[in-house]
Length: 236
Image 1: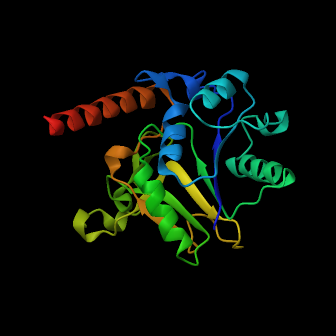
Image 2 (image 1 turned 45 degrees about the horizontal axis):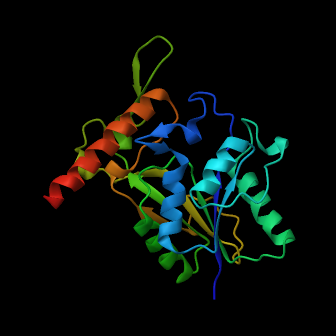
């Protein structure tokens, strides 16, 4: 039987949105949406929250996750990558005699996370030779027609040769959805996650929203409310 663990990184020192991971989002601390989706999927032997913060730890445990350690200070600053945090969690569990075949990194800021995509991605990954499977979504506008604003406040296209091309004639592009990232721990690869050893799980754009700024947060609240109302209308 293949064993899987979910790791949710959630440090306490968010700068742009203070206490973001446990800020109230439609009646619940934000992190709880990720915890509940992971538990509801029934895929994981454990749902682990990696944090350096006592309040985050208490809330996480209240909603069903475990917090078997407090993240060391050197892994809790603004510069530490998610990979180092997840590796620390896996190594900690290994030192406790626990071994896993798959790890799923789930962001604490993913209130639109749906367990069906966790299940779909796991099924695809475990039945493949790929190392990773992660959430992504299509870009809302052709990237081939994007431009930058120069130092003298003028416009400059990245690919001016595409200016006259129709949108439908340009290849569709995708971006990271920032929700979940599966890894098969038994497969080695030097590829980046956006490479040939990864399976993209495409989510609809209305389920994807980064939450890095207050503007992002407000947009996410409106999106969540719209989705909730849409579901209620369908039940009538």
